[in-house]
Image (cartoon, rainbow, N blue to C red):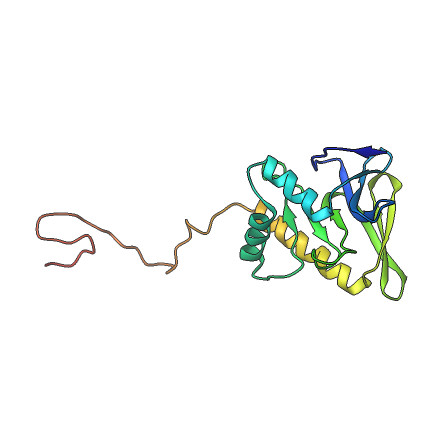
Length: 182
């Protein structure tokens, strides 16, 4: 089955690269409880189109992840902030074989053979990806840390940087805001 438009959502389990019968790139979409279907876009372009429909972009999502994770390659992307959908790549997104998997749909993963990993998804589906178990584990951990960072309360702005020290700033005639006399 082929679709003309698709927006990545909570039911999206995996986006896999493929080519149609004419050699044009497309994406195979696995959704929970449904048959796989294709869309005539590369996975990265499908992700960008979805993000643009939410007033963002692929580059913005990658830059945000790079800022949070302090890394700059094979980064997970956040599709939707209200109810986070985090996709993790199996390799560099510029490579033809890059698959994208939804963090929430990954149940388990095991080494299939040297250099490939079987990833079990919700609903009983599984995918074999051309990535070592060690590398996939690293990608999975990176995505978990990313989600953890996004879900934690932002208490950094309210923390005291000098425990036990209190500052009082008093504004009055002849006194600067720093508390020192002019």
